[in-house]
Length: 303
Length: 303
Image (cartoon, rainbow over all chains, first blue to last red; front, side):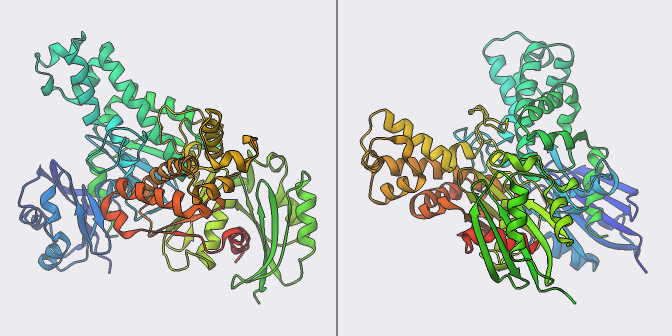
């Protein structure tokens, strides 16, 4: 008989989420804690708390580039400790169930397909919009086992060098890190803005959320920054639609809180740049599961 | 019993190719003629010449954006006559066999998968490098039914407007049209070059082949033009690898004649820009079928 549950693990740069998930994508129990340096011990301890005979397997989504052949992580800029361990092997040894590993954005795409904004689409591309930009591609109701490193597509041949080695990467213009660094640069030129008050003069304390809040309060500088980032996101979206012609683009992650300005600008720009017939047929919409997409999708790797 | 043959049709901007192809991808008979304005009549006449009771179906690859839902062509900038006709319906009515339609570069990718440079790969992306740039994506030994309009990915956010509506499209920098227009611009500034002699002073007579020949003869201007185009092609290749992480990139089309300079420069640039672990695992290699990829692939749509 099919065991009814799987454990889904979402190992991001900041937080570790572990959940017991049913075959129909219900989260039975969920643990969230800060990511620790001793990743293996931390993951095993959390999984032990919810493991039982009824668990069919374990799925892990990791912020990083996945070595599918060896079920390991090639590189994880925001979670380097995971590069040195064999998480799949360790979990298999401890729990004696099948263990699967995926990139975290890919896992989130699978989550949205199974239980979120992607339920009604045969094909879609998920963009995760946070400090950086990740992606996952679903085609014919299956997650493509591809890198989907959408954030590291160059949209400016001679742009600045990115830590990945490429130049002018999408995420250098359109993600949280870029938004903050633009805000600091502009504030340092002495421009007036509500943001000055919000951060008490210490520009480095600003968060993307502060910028969104100021923008919604009508602050010109904040609006300008979000629009510039959104315009670039729109270029990335247009490129992805022109290449993959999905039925939908699903946007998730912290930055989609700024739907009104940032995302609307992205949609406007994408509408101008995408092949007309493809844009008319694509839907661009927000994630439904937000932070739970990763654990539901990771568990979904098992089923 | 399975009928042993299919008719493969490759409908490009310049030439119409029609062939009788066996299930094991052998070309039994092949017709090539200039594309005519009366596309339906021309295609039907060519197919009649090789149709028989042993033909299982007909596959067509068309230079254009395909409306998969309605088995028609949305747009075909280089073959506008095909937008107004229902080729699939007309062929079905005339021959009473199943008829399939695909984009020509997608069909060529299927051809390379079945009988060419893609035979040994589970996943690859084909680039067709001619006047423009097209693409086709094979994943898990299946052609993805996606647009794959790789040439219309923006690699310069603020680049020149392309006829597709996007700005800074890959093909505006890296394809034949761009190579020729760069050559003309540079020659018009009075720069010395073998090309001047080759075209007898009429720059508009130049072909991409002339430029390649001059480059191989050591002409600096021709080398510079091909290297610039190649460098941009490398950016497109890097973007595609970062997103789709295929096992191989297969390059086809007239411009791959310039493998030594243009393609080598592209590979060099891609090696700098692609995520290291992905570049180490990808192979970049030339098409094996060249012009036959389209007819073999179109026939392959039937089998």
